[in-house]
Length: 387
Image (tube, rainbow, N blue to C red; front, side, top):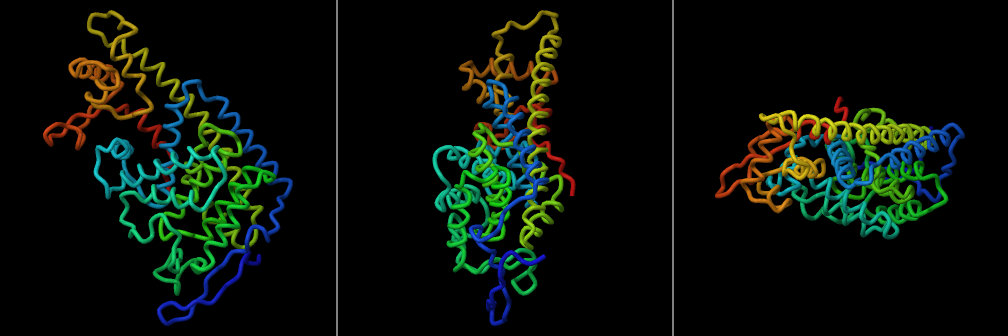
């Protein structure tokens, strides 16, 4: 295979090296084999079928899916934290400069991007805005945040002299991004193939000083949501996380000119993500039914709880929030603190929630109990996290 790009000479700290500049998408022949097109069509059908399976009250499930996506995308980059830490960070109950906060920032960037998916075309400003949100609380130097790099980049190794891939010199970045944006905004390209090719090209450009993998996967979600008119995208990163080796190999084949093989691998991942979404929706439905069976059975006097009991109403806050405090329940349901505490205790007794000690949630600097459904937390971070 021949490289789909050119090597250009650079000088790194007084020593000669070379950087890879990918061929612009406008100049590449991006035709696909019939076998690969069949896979992209199947992937699209799986995603659309999953979208049709979302219930009418889809908001909570959409949030759960996005959280699963954010956790998996961060995992691919080696950023790992317990899901409960991520949720607490989302609720500003955990400090910055922690893996949980960085994953929460990833989720915020995905959510921000999807808010714009149906609003207008992609732009360089949008990409920079996603990056700025993603880097919230990260140790990345401010000169790299929310702007394209003006320094030489590389992937793997300690410098361009021993790197796995030396990315384009800064002078090439803006033109390559402009070319990518033109391709992303086309409507005559198969949506799944468009997401695959756009992501791979973005990773070769590596326009930011840090966070390129996560922004590149946000781009996947943005394209699929936009082109397939979705409410929420399938959790593609969870499938990538299950086969990081295949993902890396696919990006390499794209760089060596075999876009067809990469699109075929990616289409299978999208199909799997669609099936995973259906499975998650079914599992949450099963959990909700299980909760309703368990709660009345735990009453000491054997009586069934009234349908308007606060404990029932607390269940409606799940799975959107995942982690609750008594103060939060009291505010959300407009009930006294005492009533909120009693309802949460009822759910703990029923085995639906567990109480753990959180930080930053108590009064006068004292830790408070936070309540979570461990079953839901498992689904939120339910990625096959195996290396």
